[in-house]
Picture 1 (cartoon, rainbow, N blue to C red):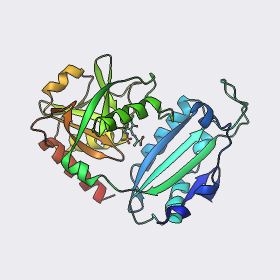
Picture 2: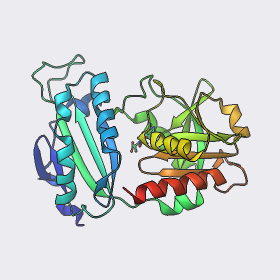
Picture 3: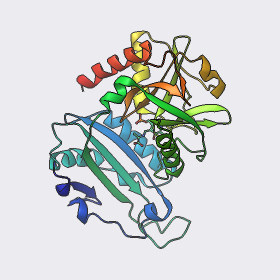
Picture 4: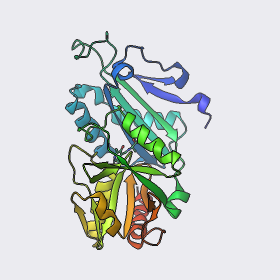
Length: 285
Ligand code: PDD
């Protein structure tokens, strides 16, 4: 696909990306006053679309942007895939809704302000090699706010954390809040303790991961024990395996934490089993 011909969606129209512009006073630009979603399309089929749209609607509700902003999103996505020649291939779909453009005041603008709705679909190259070999991660302080359950476009702490991982030659940063392990900078974190796959419970300090929900259902159906309970950073030394879960990374093995090998420093057996089961789900999408 020629990226020069990329077609995006903005406020009711499909446009060439170069033509898509938002006013400087858009509250997304001024305040990061908006929410977003990222979903995968496998050969033209959207994975867990309903769950992503539901989470988008929840994020809108939590920041008090009217639900009408998300109406019709389901119809826009196939249009984007089609227009970008992605109806048969792997693609990543991004949706962002902000509170719209208005004179800059901290409080909400007048109710007539129309939210800005943007979406794009781009070709996606899955990280096959990393998924095969696993990735190193580092632990970083969780400097985020206390509403990480909202998929806010205000991602500065996540971006800084991810760059720290890059600088350290790692693939992801895992946040530590008050001694507890929360999640990755853009992924759900899981550790395997005594054969049980454990992740932080749903709460205000983590995003409710859709990949996690799919994987945990899959584990439950295939007899792999799972648990959602808080765990401390110092418990990590007892974890036999670790993995990340996300829309883009799917099931990603972790092979070291802050330079210390996890298990024997290669992807764990349970992680491999879950990867295989997840690939099976994807194949049938
Ligand atoms: N990130 N936690 C955080 C902080 C995330 O940003 C994400 C997703 C996840 C995993 O959620 P899901 O399984 O629904 O993708 C957990 C997306 C992919 C992103 O920001 O690009």
